[in-house]
Image (cartoon, rainbow, N blue to C red; front, side, top):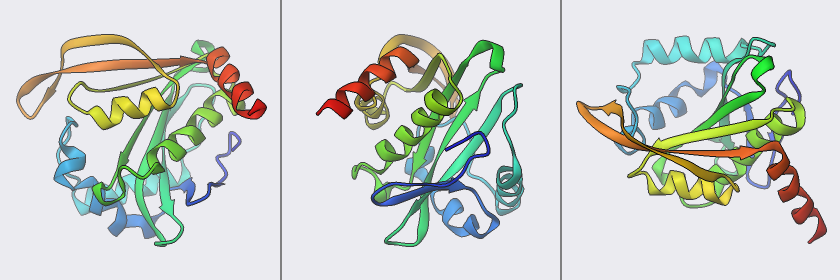
Length: 191
């Protein structure tokens, strides 16, 4: 993956730019109650989804940073099953934040891990970031366990930091430094 964001193929997935043709698959997980359970957003309308996909299909990340979402395309089923996103802060800060959403029918199979690893590779190898963080609701066990599988460490427990569906929720923040990621890559290669 390079700064122009080329598709990345794993064993079962293609991590690629969003496209207008993804609309129905995109809405299938973006409106699913289980996906939205820990998020401070309402389900997307078709109109807002069309606008979002149009912007994401062409957005480029520059030195000023920005947010970009990639489709997690399941090769065997020939459809998108979720997304991974990275929010890059301005280049001078050398850090970013990653996140993911996956349709419940595809959770627990390692797909989010594969997709998130692509983003870590992009952030550290291509963008030379110093630090990448991720945050989740403390009740979202699957999400924070994924962060731990990625080698991220829990740095904080934020009390009542996010208002979700009228109730204040707690969050965990995880982080990984470039030097830690490089160390993980060395271990993987030497095995």
